[in-house]
Length: 186
Image 1 (cartoon, rainbow, N blue to C red):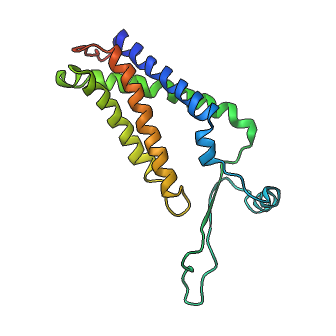
Image 2 (image 1 turned 90 degrees about the vertical axis):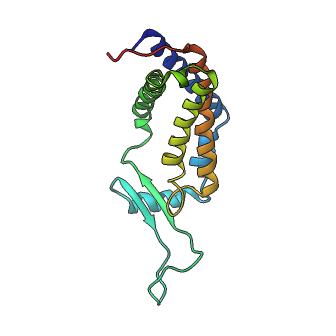
């Protein structure tokens, strides 16, 4: 990869990190969606701790009706347990940092491999990144709603978040990558 592609990708990484610090760290965007408070949390925690002892994803369905169906309109609950406590947060942050570093650099490399027509215009380069964000949004966010997942409104908000983030990264990467710069495969 050429030095300019790597620098462009790393600038995209800087945007990604700043975005996450502002939107998620300061404004609590993701935690407001992923960590809603449960009333009677201590009692619910005690029941979960007693009954869920193996890591995994658990679904708690309503009782089956005499007709052997689930009652209409009754909630279905989903519980994720990774098998670790808060002590594992450092390791998760490290793996997230690796993804934060690699994703924009790989995307910048992919952009450098595209046609001269895409590389010839700032808007086209930004659109390239926006489309990557849209692919993430469709594949990762919009498929994660429904039974045991996000409500559709949260999935849509998270999808919009991804597209906006990738567009912002694209603005910076496209600014740095000049027309006609192809990355050498090495």
